[in-house]
Length: 471
Ligand code: GDG
Image (cartoon, rainbow, N blue to C red):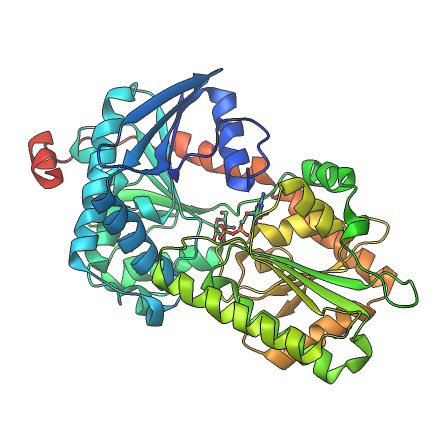
């Protein structure tokens, strides 16, 4: 079997079973372990003189490097996270565009391709992850890399009307078409991409699903990322600390618990969620004192300005709710702005009566699937899920809500709090069927099968030109 080379912005910690390892890291590690290969990406360090490090464990070599401050500012903090992330999540209002940052983004992608080239064998297949690396395949072709290269977009692909807000959208999309296979989380994302290709650049979509645009031939596919349900259930069952977390009412009853876990990001709809919870307590006062809401939201990308703003806004909102509604023996909302061990999270999911997952836009949202997989089949909780999460396409037995509808979300919470056991079980079983049939292994194997089946590309551009554009 040919070796696998994974390229992603960040390389996950090397120690196996590390608490922080999320779904993507587990899936990638697993795929690499099967065929052996390289995981290539940034080590998270910013350094004046960044070094490349290589470490081999069993059949996987981890090749990581640092970024200079300029590369970090332009490629990571700038174009990736201040332009692409907000626009791809439909937040043009939060996006900024700087030509220098875009050039930095292209420069870093070129430099990474140049660094990867000497590590490759002719029959390696290359799997590239996410929006930081859209132009990576084009850069590889410029350096004469002829291997099969596939790309998976973890976040949504926006409608063309939104995408075209990015000034170099056409150039950016052209670079994307250098991949042999482009994978999306949902059919909606894939159709948005096809819409751009057919309407903006008059590309061709053939009956067999292959596409031609900008003189390039490539394929697309839908590969919803999944979880490892049995492992989640084991982790959830092994957590013994829930007694300390779920508080009791004056009568000694366990309080109904609503749980939410997100990276602190404006796409996750946290403010809207807090307001919906407040609306529940105002309109259905019988739940007061009998319910608690635990929101875990570890800080992310804290040096991007819009992230500092959302953090302040949430602190204000949480303070407002607790200040207005708390009693001496009841705190309605517990907002924890720090990360927790994965086993604890899975245990909390199992202990909670409601998983409240309401992003304004999300490629998939693994938390929704994790919450369901962690439940006790004999007494499962209820998932309240935003229609704008990719996972809502599969988890149709959740209570589906619109995160812009505060009153509607409060009503869904009320319904979930009252839902009889039989209905909870039926919904849970339907969702588990969907989770099992599209688990993490299905995502990985489906993508790699299609990538292996695709034809590798000839070198299109001379190495001389590549050197000039990466200088
Ligand atoms: C992107 C896309 C897509 C969260 N807090 C802690 C913690 N987590 C874990 C969760 C989950 C993961 O992080 C978050 O995954 P999500 O899918 O919910 O969201 P993003 O981080 O935005 O991921 C998303 C995903 O890529 C995969 O393709 O689904 O749409 O935006 O696994 O449990 N883990 C630990 N401590 C925490 O405090 N250990």
